Length: 145
Image (cartoon, rainbow, N blue to C red):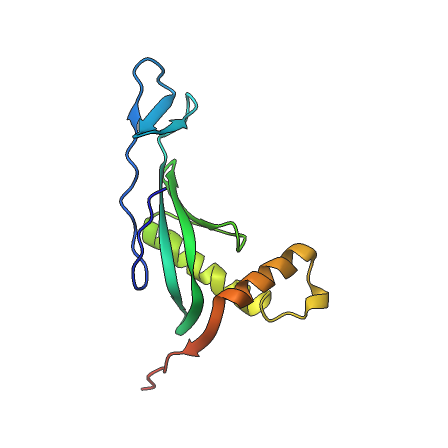
């Protein structure tokens, strides 16, 4: 998967696959091979790196960047972090990324702030991961009129 780092986030160029004419369900990109079922659409896969999460007027500052796998299949974009158990969808890359940010924020608020004894073993592992990643949460000032 191509990786592109930036100050906040950027999308890496999509991986372009070409179809093998002798076996139409196999596609190639350099030395990588992708099998696509007969009724499937071609999928695009790339990765972005978040160095902070801005959502709902808050800035979640990170100790370490979050790598997010970005997929496009069947007209739907998705952003996934298996380490954080987040899978978000959207009709565009931006919409999927915005959904990911909202899910991350909700995970911080709900799982990250819950007492350990109220969480399942899987949720406790996610809590430890999110606490290792999050350095601070800053609330941006709201202008009153």
